Length: 483
Image (spheres, rainbow, N blue to C red):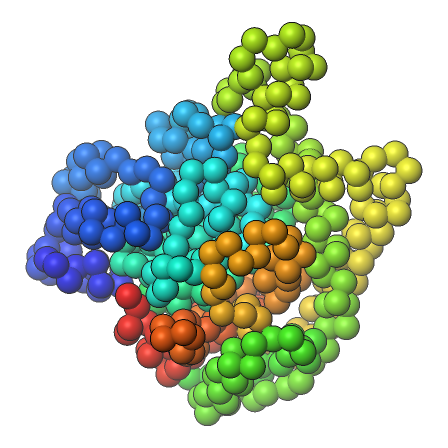
């Protein structure tokens, strides 16, 4: 069973159904692997091995994800388990209910297993903002895994999980997937219920999967997608099989290459790998079309106005009154609020709350927040116009390779630019996926590069079909050499 953790979810399920091994074997194998490597990687904040094993013993392997353990980012509520959001202010908090995505995973037969590290309240691009530990990139443990879902990506890359859930507000699934050499999918806004996902920016947040194959990501999306009465932003759409368009070729597919995503300052080696990958897509039958997204240059500024404004409002609920950290011996209610939040929140969260409160304040709302929403509309129109000409877009996921731990912690602007190619998709509400497209040698270590496909709103089936075709032809080098 020592090589069990190298299997994809589909391979794991095939073994269950043939009787080669059991769900309990897979949970034991994961626990052994975590014991072996996680002291160095730091992907997990907590896990309940005994409960997972008990669930595995009674798993129905005939269900779509029957018996498959799935790791969960520590921002998604799982009944009875911690949900710290990587923050001291929620230390010791245990979820009183299952998020809808977790409920749907259980209905599909999956076993939620473990709480995965993250940037505090999903605010960051490196997982260095966690209040508890730094997660390290399995390809080179001196480097970051990306963020904010760094634990979710690193666990899959280190073979400590078969698949995981993360959340993506501005690239927090796709960017760490790129830097860790795995596959990460951000569904369209409204495709997956946000009920039970602790909110960062409510108009941008979306739950999505990580895995070692596109087909596995599609299988998880099959389970978690759908209308939810608890979330008015979830969409009532006919059920579909997101593996249905995985044909293995790109014949008849028109792929747009946005010229604004190939900019000066991008690592030349990353650019070369992405351009090679685009040629591979052409060889699979895709027609390449240059397109323009002219308002891309405003995306970072728009995002950090809208996201921080929504964070300022959402995080006001963490006041130490009902749950979470509470300051000791406050002199009055105001002192209680001030010291609770001062002690509970980290520096990046405080920075974003201050920014968001400022742009929402009297006299500045129209100048910043309202104007940002207008530019957001223009960004969305850019994508609408591009998708009238093409079926999907192809571009880099990240402009850089994984950088060294500590390298950007004192340079927030440079850190924010790590998401320059991912943020616009959240502003527009479209779907996106990162697939490995090669390895680059850096200081004696191999580091992965990610290729990003962006699809029309609610066009996940086509997007996953395109990503799967590229994966079969161009991603094997990385996926076969995952640490």
